[in-house]
Image (cartoon, rainbow, N blue to C red; front, side, top):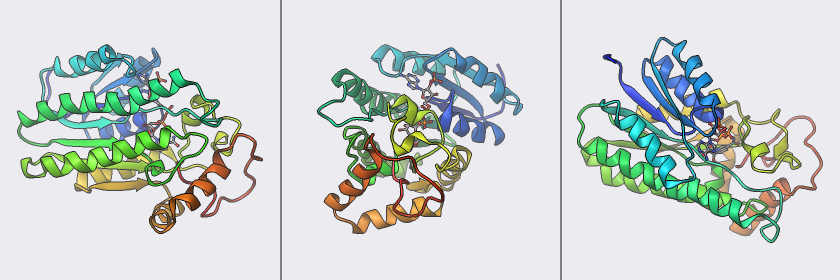
Length: 279
Ligand SMILES: NC(=O)c1ccc[n+]([C@@H]2O[C@H](COP(=O)([O-])OP(=O)(O)OC[C@H]3O[C@@H](n4cnc5c(N)ncnc54)[C@H](OP(=O)(O)O)[C@@H]3O)[C@@H](O)[C@H]2O)c1
């Protein structure tokens, strides 16, 4: 082991936005510890080593207390200060109305997106308080934090939880020099919507969505700049979050519900503001 390089950790870093966050950090000279649910986390670590840094993969289930603890131990056992922690792992459940969605899947989602977030943040914050030097935490929320999310009605609230949580601990940690930033991606090209059971909705088509590399780059740049939050995505995505501040909750619910319902026609042509950018 040995190295002067700073250490970063990324939960859910084996694919999607999390892998791109890890790649952004590796490209800036950070060694990276990544977790994933499947064995591909090891292949992802190999790809990160191509940046000339070390990567430390662990297959661990973020839906369980033991899984969160296992990844934390994996990082802590490296015996190095944690310069950057990206609390990224998250899942969705949608593709049906609340009356029809699976309760166990929703409780598991709350476990990953809320309980698991709090669990890992507790470990990271307490460790960082004993450290000196660079200490940054990126919480991956969503533009779904800024709107009701019919047809994935529990997902949006889990992301609102993450956003509020990030802004809250940011304030607490400000005077200690620990920076906390929330990343709110709009709809982004990854496996997320397919895994969320939303393949038959307008979110099933990845072609119109934000580029995950761009989203990750914006997240890391905001984290390094010390910003409180950043909307990840193109100008239309950012505008939609601005618009959300002025719209009523019922208006936003109607708009979002029309996009996330499973019986909608596929999107054709250019996506404009008002089309499914919010996630
Ligand atoms: N994509 C979007 O449109 C979008 C928009 C806004 C916010 N977000 C947020 O961005 C974050 C990342 O989403 P994504 O789009 O990158 O999703 P993704 O493509 O589905 O990737 C999810 C990542 O998390 C890992 N993961 C999933 N369940 C896990 C579990 N139980 N234990 C451990 N690891 C697990 C996956 O590991 P495996 O490699 O083993 O599958 C993968 O590395 C989430 O918090 C999501 O809420 C996404």
